[in-house]
Image (tube, rainbow, N blue to C red; front, side, top):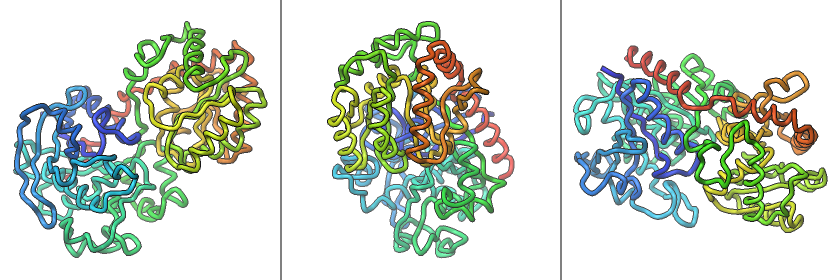
Length: 483
């Protein structure tokens, strides 16, 4: 019988996506199924999720528990044909805005209840009498939104499913007041430093870190970084103590959606032998963002959430020097209002040489990857990152800060590694170090033979989910045997 794994999360592309978590849940389960794992997905019943299940999905009632309201578990088929369960509770999930915030960007005040219900239902699948008669061998809980699921299972009766808790970004810790404890159904003994208490507050993230049978995160380097300050974000002591149970597995990417040979969102398709076709995409991008069409200077691009973590302020700090190389720059993203304004001001200061688009546009993101000569990713920390992998697949060598999954997925270009280099890694996270890497890349760009070699090195890398899915499948099997 195949191993039965419930992958529980708050996002799943293309149904609902805020960040990289949605991409992972949209791709990993189908890769697991190809490895022989009976992987199924559990999501909150957002309207888009409910709509995807069709007119009359099978439903099972979940009675109220503690302060958690009554709900139904709907069953159907999700992305790539993966079996999908949805927690149907319109009072909690049928709302405008994002999964976490209202249309004004304010967090929903009852988020503890909303995601405790998701975790509660996930835990039900890990015991006899599970919804729809499908009891899993392991609950794979993803990020703080499902952090209570390992706690519910560990604090309840045996037998139970094994649990794996995956950290996608430790900076988001699922903090709320201790007064939520009774409503979310946690027993009093869980309120302890050896439990869910974190500096006088309840942390859903800590619940997962403390109670899960094992912990994983989305790259080997990030798994090491978080066992000490500052990237442990206050949990470094707990994570260091749990180091034998902490596993770093590099994310993959959807190599069908991100394929320059077939991508429907770009103007000209290409492959390693036809890289000259990228110029047609660059002309289309230039028209979209107001650049003067040029092919005599390198084009640097960035698609990112505009936040201090992502280091866009470092790019803005070097923008004048970058343009003076000479080079062009395109900035695409949304987030911090001050950073958005600075990006637009930078474009106004350098008309025709800097383009800025504030907002999220999937087609424009694909077009930039297919157009730019270099992709900028100066994140101060990055659990995994995906754009650096997309970039290599698109023959767009990335320039990345030496942290987390960026280190694990980019091979630095220097005189000794030009044979297999795929991008530039800079340290520390400073404007000066970034500018030095940009200058090195711009200099190599003028050596077209060497530049083609770096492009093709990156395009030869395999960033599919196959290797990652095999690692997860082996870890699942070991955990299921232990419980």
